[in-house]
Length: 280
Length: 286
Image (cartoon, rainbow over all chains, first blue to last red):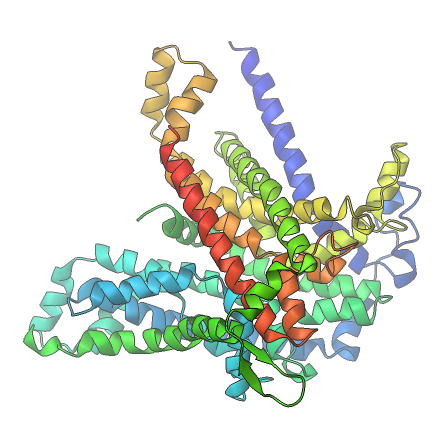
């Protein structure tokens, strides 16, 4: 028995390393290519040598040019603004609704909750085209409203908060009521400070979904002024298909920002994800 | 608690209002649009009943698109669910440094599908891609990848799998972690083989997360759109022209919102039917 265990462990490590290679190879490829001079990017692809994988000359010119020549600052600003605004409003509106579902008895409660569940089962892609026509009628095409407002109310976020609020003891609220606190005060001063972990999970979900969103901004923004990163990247690949190093630099930034946010908070992300998928 | 008559409704109001306007109303609007045809001159809409739907049934492009969508899903969903399950089992092993592997596994979650497509597309370029160059180095034949009508759909499956499996395995890993160790110990004492343990202990307890992953993954893949839009435009020879792309093209390329909405409505019905079937199968299987 003792001799089979290390062999098994080595096999597991080998498998894990293979998986890691499969996961990181395109990302490393983008990173390495982004710091190569433009002429070097495809120079060493064939035949395969050590130069294929390790850059011999390193430059950050692509990153500099991105901001200097392609107004990448605006794109980054737009994407962050849209994501952060969605997170803020999404958390407020979602937790308010969840508070109501978890701590009140009222007429039509189960009907309304059923409605919320129904809305998060409707995939966004299915409503994208009619929603586009609605946004068009509202005159919101090419505006931050179009990017933010439809994403703010999210059934999944309401669901997450409700789970958490249901576990909070009612005594907490009752004693505050006896002290004469108003409901709004209870929500802002007692409930919300307690639910930081859920707020982080919900915030991460909203942030990532906005950061990655592509189809919707593609439909509702046409001018450069409201470009977000995913659309900018796909435009860049079709319009400036020879500026490889800048394209890679843009991809690296588009990946690194959410990684830097997700990795330190991954515990909350995993918690949030699993709370929506496993528990009732 | 007599004075809380309106309070719960006030707390609900913003969310419910926004969901009504931006989630429910578009569905109604979509259904309505699918019953109208729009003339090319001006914005005159005329009621067409189910003409948009009956039109689709005699449309060979539509049927080819239905075939491609079903073909894609028959393969991509089992592949992704099985790989996610294997990955979750591997990530559940008690090894030194396992938390590092778990973190790395989360990386594709924040790589958007468009970025994954763009990067893989460059690596898989038939002429100057690094994958063909490595194949060459290993004395293997070079491949056309996305340029081939037989390979394109498989490349899209591979890219979507690269992006998706890490995310789905998070759900399954959480499920595995909730299986109590004592059950395995008991099975060990009873002399159950590894396979018997998996079949009789792990699998039954994993039904809920497995059902969730299967259903959500299926919905995601039926609506998969970005890879085809970015990489193949539905080609070569319509071999990757899924229903979602056909609908997008109807709406924004051919300016036929009636046809686009009818396709989406049929897609929705198709998805709901398949979800109902999956629920039945996963519930009954012991």
